[in-house]
Amino acid sequence: MIASTQEQVIKAKYEALKPELDARGRRLWTATEALSLGHGRAATVARATGLAASTVRLGKQELTSPSQATDSPRRVGQHGAG
Image (tube, rainbow, N blue to C red; front, top):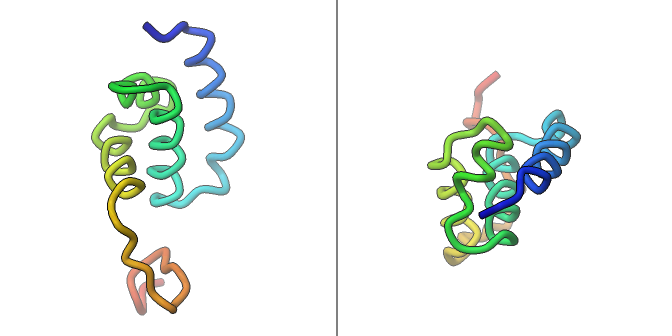
């Protein structure tokens, strides 16, 4: 079981980074936190951040799947949006 102090530390880190993260950044950061805690910790990170556990799991999939690297810079939104 994860101590509530660890959950509070995750929450504090997330609140500090939150203004700088886009949706993909949030997924990857939360996934990294969950992986550092060990197996089955997506729910812990989700509670600490207020994000859905499915979002954390999706980030874990993105981290562990082969990269679809391209020569173009990473896009944040749809082409032509905004």
